[in-house]
Length: 183
Figure 1 (cartoon, rainbow, N blue to C red):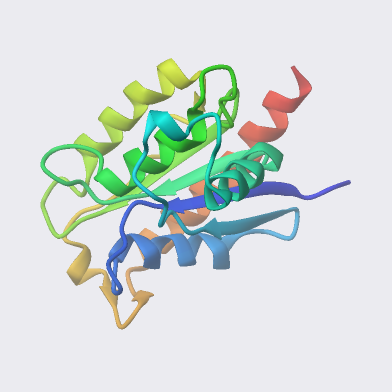
Figure 2 (spheres, rainbow, N blue to C red):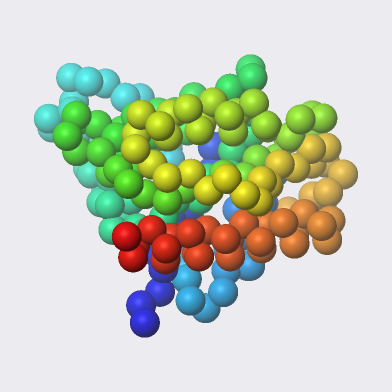
């Protein structure tokens, strides 16, 4: 049986990003039946004038998403919403009209933040985008890591419950993806 291919997107470019750390924890938690490839999202700003002549970096990005079975996103919340770098990547992946690389992909979300809500509002906004993009969002478990600075130290998730929830999410995404492939 072939491995489930999951593409990981981190919505933060910060060197010591908590969301990068939880994505790396997902990578460590991934069972041998699946693989996670974390894609860089340092893409040019979306410009509709370039849609019919995509920059090579965007073509490569879209190609990796197209062959993936599922998407895993780890992102902070900026100003109650989706960080611009993640929104930009989603815009490129879904354009031009009729060439949506995200179409019908199972997707799961994680977020970590120093705040009390842990990125929850970003997750809800992102789910709204999934409706238009025709993506299938995994509803549970929710991985929302509040007060991340207390749970993540020196680039490692130190909090056992957080590690367990990330592992649960990865396993649930794999099961959800297998079910969606059968339909």
